Image (cartoon, rainbow, N blue to C red; front, top):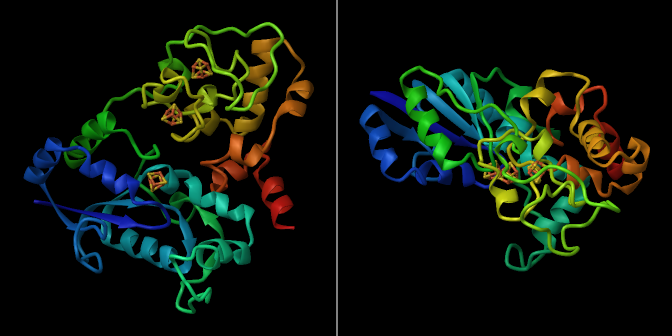
Length: 306
Ligand code: SF4
Ligand code: SF4
Ligand code: SF4
């Protein structure tokens, strides 16, 4: 029987819960494999030495995460990044916009229910100097994006992995899964999410809402736009962004909006706001995304940490 492990790094454990959310499919999986280690679902303190497939969820943000990642890489024949935190740093990457002091103040001193005395514990693992996606540090065999990955696709991906196969699934962007009519409204201007109520028929970007569908990997059936909410990019970058070094989330969104509205890119750039949270909320911790020639990530991080 195959031995499966799920390691937790800097994340929210939602990706492990997504595996549990497979409901009865879990029973089929357990016919083929035994879960030998998962801190969220069982009381086993350390992964055993022989593991066939290990899933890693969460990013690397401290020394303990780093050690655990290297350890599981040594023990697992196949290592899979599960979720956008593992694949691209995810929300843990946003911590790079704050100093260590600010983070400790928020997490310990600012929350009465965590530490009444406001004293920061001394046995907390030290931060790494930045957040890392797991593939920035060790060789990964597969990546499954999503915050968390969606049930409908995990149901196909995990059983295929157990057989040593790759599930044949869509590799398109969120836009390609969206049912809205493309085009822009007259007098287009960039709106905040709380401004007005978008109509259900037309493209949200065309109505002025910053929808990251054009630059985001699909496999969520455009869940947010179909519920009248702009996509904020939780599945990570689309394949064309990943493949082309000159394509970045920021510059491709600016180009897309300019094409849609017939307005010069410079004008669009002036209207963009809070770029770290609107363009890179799930990818700011990824070295692959930071190293792109048009990426704004390096400047944004340096600006905030000054
Ligand atoms: S990818 Fe999303 S669901 Fe998974 S650990 Fe990170 S924050 Fe949680
Ligand atoms: S930009 Fe958003 S709303 Fe418009 S088609 Fe793409 S996913 Fe749909
Ligand atoms: S539409 Fe965008 S934000 Fe919503 S689930 Fe899909 S990728 Fe995530």
